[in-house]
Image (cartoon, rainbow, N blue to C red; front, side, top):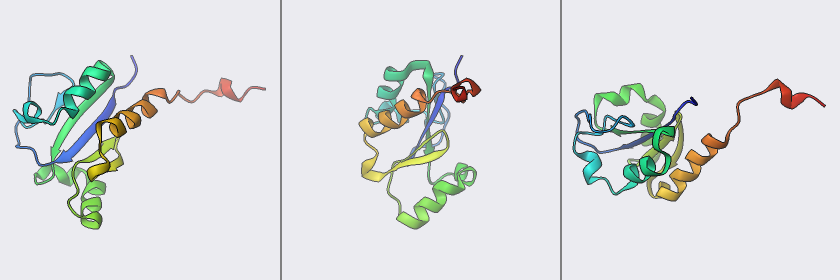
Length: 120
C-alpha cells in the first residue's frame, strides 16, 4: 500500500484528541465538526490515501514544526498554514480547498524513482 499523503492544517484549534476517524489526528475533539468543510472534503475525496491533522499554533506541539513557526514570525499569523508531506505549501487566504487538493494531487501523482526510467 502506498504511503498516505500527510496534510497538516495549522491554525487555532482546541486541544484534544479525536478518535472518530482513522485519517484524522489531533483535531481538537470537536474541531472537525466546526471545520469549514476542508477536512471532511479532503477525507471524502481521498479516503485512505490522505491523513489530515489540525495543529493548534498556540500549542506546545509547535515546537515540532520550526519551519511553520518561522513562517509565522516572518509573515504574521496568516492561517491556515498548510503543509503537505512536511513542506509548507499554502498560507492564509491562498489555502483554499482547490489549492490544497492540487497540492495533494501533485503528491499522489509523483511516481517513485526508478532506474528503469533511465534506460535508453
